[in-house]
Length: 278
Image 1 (spheres, rainbow, N blue to C red):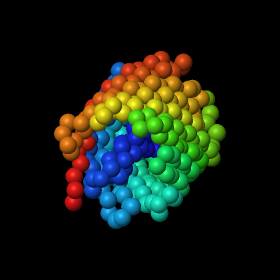
Image 2 (image 1 turned 120 degrees about the horizontal axis):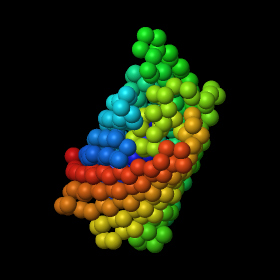
Image 3 (image 1 turned 60 degrees about the vertical axis):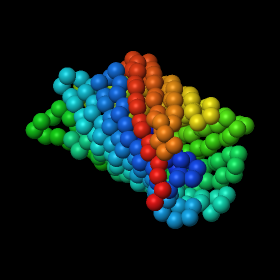
Image 4 (image 1 turned 45 degrees about the vertical axis):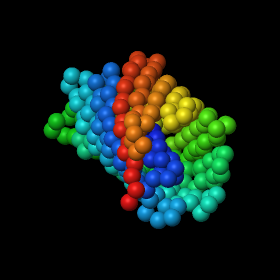
């Protein structure tokens, strides 16, 4: 699954293009106190009138225990076309570590928008392959699927306030059993960059963005429920976006994740966006 972080980056790029640019490229780094680090690059380009192509690539490194380290790669591609008030998005991607967990995803959404609001209905199909770690001579592979339905939207409240929300619920074709493999248990960490956190039963987010001239503050409240452990992780993230020049922005984020089962973690990220015309 493409994480919420990368979907947000794609949204930022699409909004920047809609504001008048022909393309955007960006990248940054994210790290947390649960021994996880992510490096990502994103981009968007206008390929025709009212048609945008956006993509992202990333690599994550996570060390949930002394015995276990994962290195995750991610790529994602999305096409967005609007017919005025109505539009659609089609996307697909890959997320995973071949030695532990892989996911091939496809998604589609249909949205309605005007100058004040946007509402989108979303569907996602995910194909997983889980390899049981820690069994050196006889690894076991478990293929399974998940289908998700969700909704997202945003509302402009005046000139300087924007309210955003999203939610998704997944239906898996397997029933997860209690876990007795310590390495799998170690993977179930509070880190939002952890590989196993791609396996969610449901997720939801509400956010408020406050514009102050060319600068923007955003406050996000999110929650996700794990599909395997059924534990719920709650998150608070504060983002600050400010212009560096007429064609570049920098975004700094600070967040806190809390889980009753796995404790808490704090994360920090810095991203830079560059805009141009073809």
